[in-house]
Length: 347
Image 1 (tube, rainbow, N blue to C red):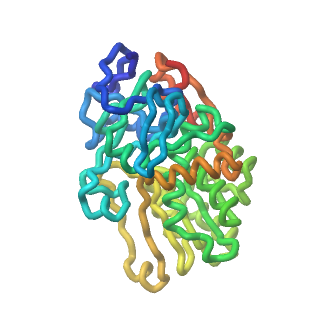
Image 2 (image 1 turned 180 degrees about the vertical axis):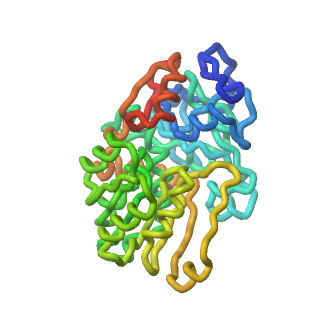
């Protein structure tokens, strides 16, 4: 098969590559380029041991019938979204169904070959947890490749539990694809009043077009914090979502979070990043600080349902399309923040 093989920082080659066949193989229809993929390409990552094929936001097509753990059968030729986690199925977290927190977690597109290829092998553990989800007929392949990041955003959404407060006030720091997915979830599922803080003009305009209540350009932390606090009526936000890997976002989050608020650290940060925090501020203001990582198959199924119903419009997020041979162009537009999501859709 043809694949984009990652050999190390700044070294990726589109070439003939062996398919490490498992019991289950998918034909790849589309694979979106995550910011994580771009960072791995430039800098490598502790989870990635080259050579390996990156890409974990995958829409594929089954080549054979697949018997799922719940007794259902996914027929050959069915389009599916793939949950890229490979849990051990034996640790405490796996026994609790929290497969994304597995103590021995592996991942398709990081530790095992992923979707920047004509085919991808799916380990049995992924099948056993229900990691293949049929794609609704009204979603295209490119939209379906974004079901995986949408499922991850649902993970963060569930942790925030915004429905407990009527029309919560939310600040999303980060105007990229993930920030705009959070925007749609919080507006359309929680009825929230949402402000987006960003730096890229085209992305901030997109946030306006899909329903944000306010947009603030982030230049100076204190000035931006003052503007955001005005938006909240000086009370501060009830929810803050950090959807950018820029470390300065954390300081801004602490300045705009209100009392009894929740701060969700959704984005990964540079290796070794540390933050200072006033413990008394956290305690006396009753602030909850949480992280959110990956997702589980039930979240992927829910992502497919709400995307099919139009609660979240994934087509708004896809802005660039490339053949596999131009994978480096797709990575470049991703790291330059040109548009939103780039998708490899021709193999």
